[in-house]
Length: 484
Image (cartoon, rainbow, N blue to C red):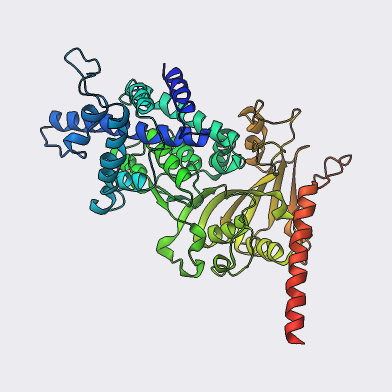
């Protein structure tokens, strides 16, 4: 039933002039879904308070409650069409009363860890894009059919929401920005092995896939005590996200998976100077897939000791700095990081090898990230001791990956099994740090067990390196001219 309801909502939004893409569909569905979730949450909390003879202070004022403006019911439990706003009346109420009221929550909240603060933050970043009040009424009626009360309902809802995020990622030019394949995330989490009490961080949170999967992993890792569940809810997951839509989707995704007040901050992580990071700011676990191919301005690069315009390489510096000694990380990054010959890439590889134990590199096949058009690897490292040996695993599949043939759990089963003992195989091998060229620190994936294979770089990779080297040459010439 839920799946058909989501499809019907998309059908309504498709015919609205204000919604032109999958990105708009999920954004507009999200704010309405959130208010319905909030209504169900309040009902549950009120019931629990009454059962334990406690009073309950309601979050939303009466006139802005779902049951008052969105879905007033008659004595038979059916929508009361006399009280339910529609058309221009509904659109005006949403734009001029509801949104301004909810935006004020951010100012009135006692602290950022509360659901009140998250309400204010979400609605400060959103606008109602549904231009027809009649279409808005249809969507509200459909969302009203959904229930968030039981564990089974929440579980099904979270999976459907994940599907919407996946569709949005496939629809957009930068698919990987919104959607990292869940089988890959689950494998990364299993290798990193978070524990209850670890503080887990993603500074490029996107739709919060890594945080959600880590939550599910820890929630089922053992029978949790009430105290442990509270730690999991409030003091475990932290994220930062620059883009408004991804930020909202990330919060909604975490809420649907059972984290009531997600600790995600809407900010550009890279505008923070890493020299200012102190011990109290550090995390035990970092799980992340920073944006592919982004470019940062010169003033942002000043926040980092190794200057580069490549967004992912700045993120990697940030992650190394903000990881605790003994902390563990799993980071998805473009495979060009392993071999680029520019000065910044060489220095960053050197820093990673000297300050961390880069123990595992997972080489992913082309097509892992639908629509992203880049080849990637996952770096697994532990901070606090230098690298001695790197275990490589080259994921070789007998099929091409794509939108209709995505990465699955079975594809990664051998990697997970062999990684436990860093075992050699046709797809895996170990490189001693003493065998790495200390001038280039080249960490390229070169499988010694497949002698017949000639690994050629893609034209995109070659062009990217030429562009980087040309830029470096221009900067060097400019410096020489100033000296002359």
